[in-house]
Length: 329
Image (cartoon, rainbow, N blue to C red; front, side):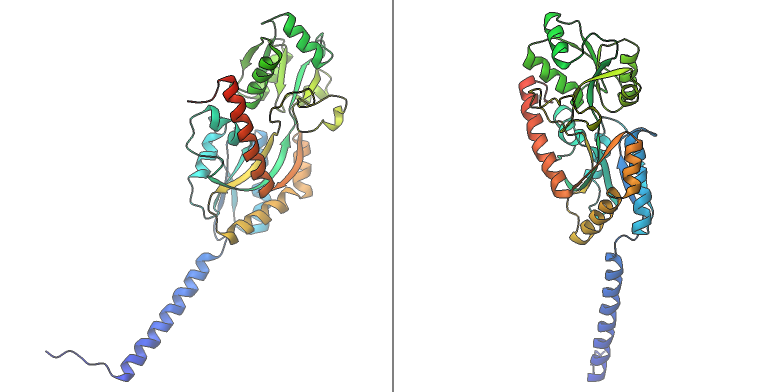
């Protein structure tokens, strides 16, 4: 059987069909490239009702309005917020998975725990949302009126001071151990599963000092706690006469921000869309009002500044943990 020969007409028809097919394919590809086109998930590691959880939900609400697609807050609780960070690190870098994480899960936890991500290489940082207000507090009826008095007592009475924190391996715990080494003092760490029970322990007299991670503030404002030092980059405006840990001579990272990140490798248009949306939300009056009501500080940093903070503080914590012999092996 002889094969069919193609005429010029047949060839023209085939070329026409090919052009139409390519055009349709291009249109489909263009439609697929539109971002966002489906639900975006914001992973965070705080228990339901916690400040990080509520802030993540606030972001989701504001982004749903601006991006015109559903944006939801998804919890991945546990392991000092590292489970949520891990979820983001190993997600497809298409913009539909982002994270809302305390900076400590990116600068401290990877050095003290076994994690499956590298905070320096596995994320595209989009912005910083808020800053948490940390401080060293004692009960109002405690004998120490200043940080100096507390340190002098601790040095003269080894092992007589018990301090609480929001958990072993947190930046509060590690900062106190660093201070103990620098001051040649001995005090005892009593970890709790979160800031709220750690604050309650101080209120009940079970410990003498609390490195507050935010939960101390209602008691401080009510006059039940006294602030001896601010664990912040700058002094707390309402307590401008109280020095920061760094002003007292301790070179430890004091950034307590919560930042937004995505898997490394976002396409530039997707990254730009997300950065613009999160920036608009973080700078909005609604988010600022929410943060203040949650006893947080509205604090915006762009992606580049956030990344710089992560890089610098990871390096400093690495040096501190080497000195303390507390780095994960």
